[in-house]
Length: 166
Image 1 (cartoon, rainbow, N blue to C red):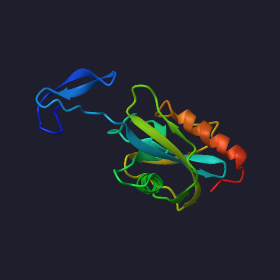
Image 2: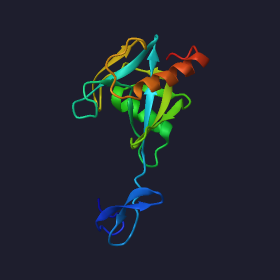
Image 3: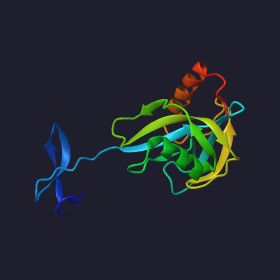
Image 4: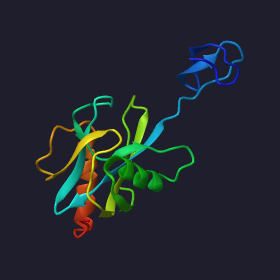
C-alpha cells in the first residue's frame, strides 16, 4: 500500500492500539475504514425475493437478498432503492432500518431494510443471473453467513407488523 498523502510506501506499525499502514516517508497514518452496504428483504405472498449471484461475484452461484454498496455522499435509503432497481428491476419503498450487521475481520457493515412496497416483476440484472421467490423455510443455498441474520431481523419486524407483505 502506498501513502495517500505523498505516495511513499507504507509499513504496518502500532498506532492508536492497532496495527495500521504508516508512511515510511511522511509518517501519515492510513485508517482503513469499513465499507457500508445495504440489503433489502422484499416479500410477496409469503415468499422472499432472492437473486443468484453471477460468476464474477463473491459467492458465485449462491443466492442472496438484493444488496450493494453505498456510494460516498449517498443517502443510505436511496442506495437501498437504487440497488434493488439495479439488481432486480423493482421500484420499492423501504421501511425502517432493521439492523446493522458486522463481523470481526469483515470490512463491510451491512444495513438491513424491509421493502414496504414493490412495483414490477423482478428481472435479474447487475450481478445476478436469475431471481426467484422462496418460502422463508425453504431457501436455496445462501451466499453469506449473515443471510440467516437478515431473515431473522425481517421475521422479528414482521411479528410486530404482520400485514407488511408487498
